[in-house]
Structure formats: C-alpha cells, structure tokens
Length: 131
Length: 130
Image (cartoon, rainbow over all chains, first blue to last red; front, side):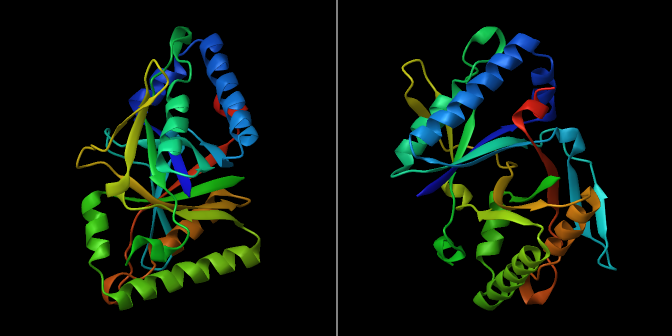
C-alpha cells in the first residue's frame, strides 16, 4: 500500500521558517537527507519532493479561449504543500510511524519540531475510490 | 524545470464529485487519461498520483516515545489534495498551459469543471534552504 506523507504550512508558517538561523535550517535539512536515506535502506521509499515557496504559487484556470488565466491570490488560511514523501508499506500504522519520525525533525534550537504530517493513501487506480 | 500541478478540494467539493453520474465521471477520467498520454508523448510527463478520499486523511505528530499520535479532525475549510501531476517543462507558461487543460476537463453534463489548479515549482532540498 502506498501512502503519501505531506508537510503543509500557511504563508505565516513559511515566514517563520525563513527566520530560522542558518544552523537550525542546516540541522533540519541534514535530518531530512538522513531520513530519506533511512527510508531507502528500509525498502519503503518511493519518492520525495520539496516545493518552491508559496509566494511563487499560481492558481490556474482556463479562459474562454482556452488560454490559461493565472492568479496568485490565496486566502490567508490557505495551507501550502511544502513537500512530501511517498512510502510503500504493509499497513497504515507503519505509515503513521514513519510520519511520526518526520514530525520529530529538528526545529529551532534543535528541539523536535513536532510538525503536523498529513497521511493519505495513494490510489493504485481510480476504481480504488469505489465510484 | 519541474512543476507540480495540484488539484485540491474541500470535503464538500469531494462529496459533490462523488455524486456525479457514472457517465460524467467516465468522461472526466477519459480526458485526464488522454492528457497524461499526450504529456508522455511530448516528453513533459514525470508522474501523477491520485489520493484516497479526505475522510481517510490522518494527521500525525510524533511524541516523546517516538510513537505516532494520530487525529482525523480538520477544519471545514481545509483543502485536501486530490491528486497531482509532475511535469518537466522549459517554462512556467508551459506548466500553466497544461494546468489550464486539466482545469477544463469535463464535469457534470460535459461542462468544463473550471477547477483551479495550483502550480508550484519543485525544488531540491538544498535550493529550498536558501
């Protein structure tokens, strides 16, 4: 079963992160690198990606002529995806345990960040939705 | 440059999708499949995934003993990721163009959903920390 573990944050939370000291950021990034390597060694790793800053996010719709209309206006409460991991595991509980490890990534001063990680199953095919 | 095209919706939005007729859902999926095929042929395609329904979403935090604390409670306004496409394109404009095609995939009665698609660049871990 594939699960996606997502880190989300509002613009305000991203701004807080941008204020971390260089040392704190480096410790966080080093943790993330090691975590990715551990997941590979454990045989559960499928993919991971980090996304650009929310201030570069665009919302796209099609105009009447089919040309894209872009817009960068979001409500303040909007949660932006910061990054994700996809893991292939035997049970949801295993995915939650991995998410708890990501949650404990170091924050300011090296204390565990206790970040919220959203966990969702990835569908094998559309029929998995049961429609 | 890699871009991720995110399709998101609230629980209410997902409930209305689930209420579409089978014919409408099939027509919608057929268009998404043909877009994937075209992106593969044009060399822009990197990956796509669909996610399970929001009512199965869980939020996890670690606790001191390292065991997960799980919770399935979200604010009503919470937007859940439904699925995404990753494309590797030369310009952001090309990513917007692809997003707008996904946005006009047919909804109920064949009318374009006009769903907004969020477009974000994918960065490496080292670039993000700058």
